[in-house]
Image (cartoon, rainbow, N blue to C red; front, side):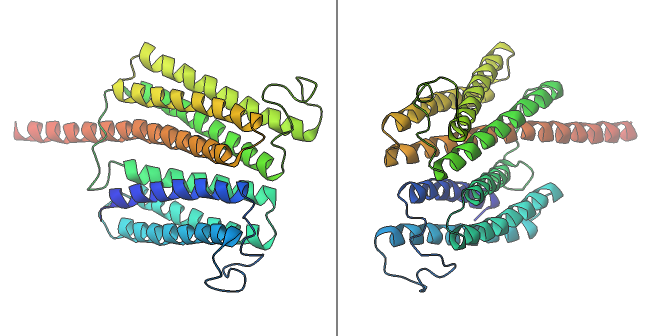
Length: 313
């Protein structure tokens, strides 16, 4: 199997693991295996029912992802790829090890909210590494990533997408912490209790989460508008339109979660759409970055060709 396909399957499996982790939390199944790791209720294969089945399935999916990631890591190191790809592969492996250790701490320490939040952030960074490897044009099976943007535009777009990714991660982090602290209903779908402004810590955290979500939405809308106004090309325009539709859906789902007093399927769907948005923005960021790589490679190739032609003349 090629590097690109391995990375793609890794992206899919990581996405499913994150969303399934949301179901584990929403269904209160996080301690389904008891405060034990790597064993589950003192057994390698426990009685699979109820919360134990849900938590055990989450661990099995994580183990499959770990095996696939290690396979991808060795594939990168024993294939003709650039040093940058190897570095990202090493970062991916390091994040995987940290993620495993955090997962063990979460179970042993009885689901501390701050560790769960860090656990999610590391999962997102790990997912970003896999997306980078999947979209990287520098390995022999990859695509060339050509684009028609000038270097100035590429640099500007990359900066905007980096800021947007930071906003997304912070929004997800606050959302995870609020969820595990049971602050999800501290505010209504518009205001906080009898006041529009937060009056206590849970309300303040919920308001920050909403503020970040709104800022992210406005930023995506602005970048979508600029992509058409400044002629960033159809490939980027399609990506921004998809991101716009996704983030608007996310706002509607978030309101629905509050109105339904955190209905479990809707809460899991909320996480699924948010993670999907992170995937779309990350892929767009690396797509633009690949344009810069290809532009540099093309310039080097033209330089060598012209140099060779002058020597022949």
